[in-house]
Image (tube, rainbow, N blue to C red; front, side):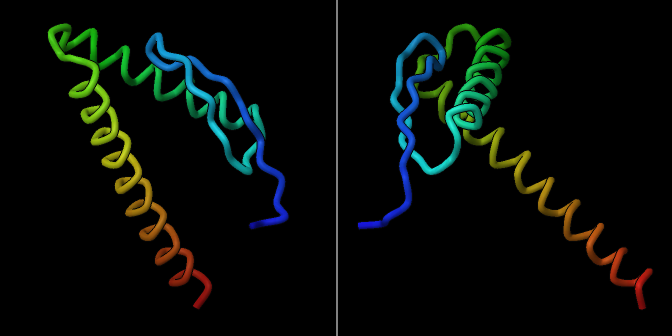
Length: 86
């Protein structure tokens, strides 16, 4: 078992209570939960007939899509920085 301290943080996401356990600060965990809640509400407002499971999957797909775009942008910026330094 790890010696690293785990934080337990209660959050509300889309009307459901969750206890998130992780190494990140409670503030960070609350920020992440708030962003997930916001994205779920945004998607739900555009697709009110979605059940919670489908809404959660679409939220995850959107989050991973954004993550891949950010990774791609980071890679391009790192390549550009490397060219400038050389």
